[in-house]
Structure formats: C-alpha cells, structure tokens
Length: 295
Image (cartoon, rainbow, N blue to C red; front, side, top):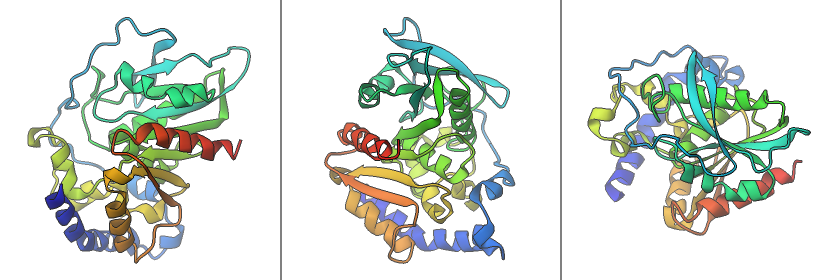
C-alpha cells in the first residue's frame, strides 16, 4: 500500500495538470458543471467483460427481502429491497445503498441494519454486467448511470417519500456515491460514503489486468471515474467517513495538498474509529444522525 500511496502523491501534479487542461480550461468555469462535461465524454470500452467478482443467484431471499428489478438504459437490472419498514398506506423515507466490490449479496443488505433500525426502507441495486445482468463491466462509468436510475426508480414507488431519499455507499460503492454527488442527476437529498476515494494508480490494483475494460493510459478515462480529481465540481454536500485505521490522516493530507491546503467546499471528510470494514457501521450511524437533522 505504501508504494501505491507514493505513486498517488506523485500523480497529484499530473492530476492537477489534467484538470487544468480539460475541465478547467473553459472560460465559463464558474458556471460549468461536471455532469455536462461527462455527458459530452464518450468512454472507449476496449473489452466486453462481466464484473470481476463471483456472485450467488438471488434464490430463497431472507425474510423481509424482496428481489426486484429496475430499468436503466434499456436494461432490466436486479436489486434487493428490504421491506421491514414498508407500509403501503404511507410514504416512507429511504436509503439507496451502493454495495462494495463488484457484486451484490444478501450480506450487503444485512450490513444496512442501522438504516433499517432507524426506520428507513433500504434498496440495494446491482449494475450492468454484474450478478448476471445484461451489459458489461465499465468500472465507475455506465454503472453510475445505473445507480442514478436506481434512485429515480425508487422515488417513483408509491410507498416512498420521494423528498426523503438518501444515498450511501461503502468502498467501491462509496466512490459511486461520490460520483453521484458530482452528477446530481437523481432524486437523492444527500449522499454519503464509508471510504471510496481512489487514485489513478489504484484502479489496476483493484481488479486483475485482464479485467480493465478501458485504456488506463487515457487521461480523461481516469478523470471521469475518480472523483478525487474533480471535488471542486460537487453539486451537493458529500459526507465521506474514513476510519483512523483506514489511513484517514493520509487521505486528508493528500487531498489538502491536491486542493491548495484545503478541503473542497462541499466535501466533508470525517474521521471515525476502525478500519475499512469496522468503520462501516459507525459511519452509517453518523450519516443517519446528520440526515435526521434535516428531516
């Protein structure tokens, strides 16, 4: 990990140059939005592959869990809906949970017990190319559109309070949640993450080389997949919780160096006890406390 971190620090200057030469070159930069730039960028997928993680079929779901489907760009994608707090006679607040890794399992929904205990309906979507879905693995690109469409699908359900939908992600899902905060194309009121900050050199470390669906040497392919380089373009406040034992101080220092000794305005980096996994439950509890202030 230390070698990866050294590479990430080296890449800071490159990243800033990329930002200046692409997004920030516009004379209308103060009026520009990340999602407009992203809309005009066409990723070049060089391999048609499925998500690089084993999954189990959603057979015999646990009690109070329904297997549902939502549509995204013409694809019917799977999702898991926890129905403990679902009441067809009223509209209930909800959280869309973006799972870690590259497949969804029942255990991911079990991790959301703090949200369930707090009275939220929880919906965990899968994305294109994973869990047997149509489409292919795009690695933080088309999957973001799927996550947006999952939020918007949930907002249309009769039992959901569409004004009280929130998004929270863990690890890979945390990066997805941060990308949603940049795109601002969905009905979520506030997004949060338990970890989820990635640098250019880290992407090939998270999957085997044969599972990289795009050319890592193309700068903009990275720019639109790693929100750490475009945090100044956040369109809504994003809460990212990182455990002390998950190198919180290193992340904080590195991001401050990238953004002229400060943390971008809408990006809240919050330290908690624990590591990458043990900090997940405390981060969910803190996120609930934060959003309950606004209800």
